[in-house]
Length: 436
Ligand SMILES: Nc1ncnc2c1ncn2[C@@H]1O[C@H](COP(=O)(O)OP(=O)(O)O)[C@@H](O)[C@H]1O
Ligand SMILES: [Mg+2]
Image (cartoon, rainbow, N blue to C red):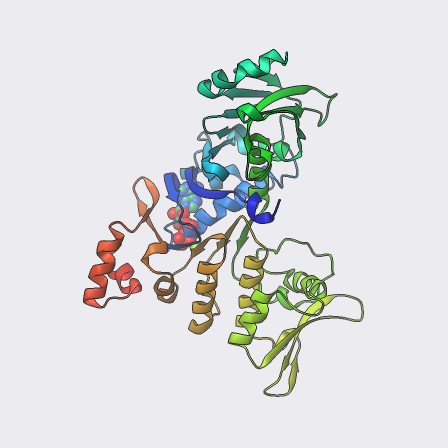
């Protein structure tokens, strides 16, 4: 299965009681989404919601999420009200017109953040709900009635609703679902349904549960195992970046400083060095192409110090100089940070304040690159250039309201675009004067 096929597309996210968001739904565009709004309208907070989900669901170090960068639950819950739960609901597009929703509820009375409930529902097929030590598997009634007879003849015990006690109550369903082996044991091709065996053997003796699943013909995989596995992959591959740490990014770094690009680019040189070696002395095309376009007089070469740490080095062909990290321009690092993020194929890429350090020509190039890249991205900006290059059809407008931060798309898009052409207005003029 190629990486392309394994990707879920996020259609929307509903955010409740997260920082300034009391109850808000973001409907995503395919590709680039540009988040605009005044200061403190929640742009950073919205992007951080994804970062929080990744940390809480797949990177958690202890059963209680007590050591997060936001310090306490109080700081991340709307109005600092610790008694309120934080809730997210994500809607995904699956292959062959299936859809799924994933819901997670966090609580934090007393400061310890816990996952109170998770529900993963593959629409019109089956849902998995985990609350404490109970996992409930419930089939859609129509799906169950249509398929159960065939399976019953084989004497597997399958009920429409089944409760199982789980031993791994601390771990998220997302985390567990990625490591549970789901094995197709029998194919019922005539009915396009497969039977899976599902082993609960993470920490305790094996317990086997049988599951019914439609077959995904294009993937040659059972839908249920595909959906569970790709949901975990979605959360793992969330990538949040903001302006690079321009001091730290210049320090030589050990080879093994991670495979996932860090938020402020600290391991940028290590990642580029690895790609450079893998490419036989060439960086990925996307990066080579951008450098040729934007810095044609520079040749970039990742290099190594005598004690084996990696750093970036540039040959300036025009001035005949070799530039070590202290002499490399900030905008160059910024460009590389963003391009490396795109090239690492995240499930969703979140970029806060894209425009910092960038000249308009490079900024335009990056926005075009994000529009054409085959990934979903959300970019927060105050820059009219980003808005103009992206166009109104990518805008997500954020505002503060008495009911918390709200986001909306531009309504009557075609009508507004026609009017803009008549009046010769640019998208950024529209955004600044008309749309908010
Ligand atoms: N726990 C919270 N409860 C309510 N509002 C919050 C909370 N945390 C942050 N906020 C609001 O969110 C604002 C910060 O939003 P932020 O995402 O940084 O905005 P932007 O990036 O658009 O400037 C704060 O000024 C505050 O009004
Ligand atoms: Mg901000």
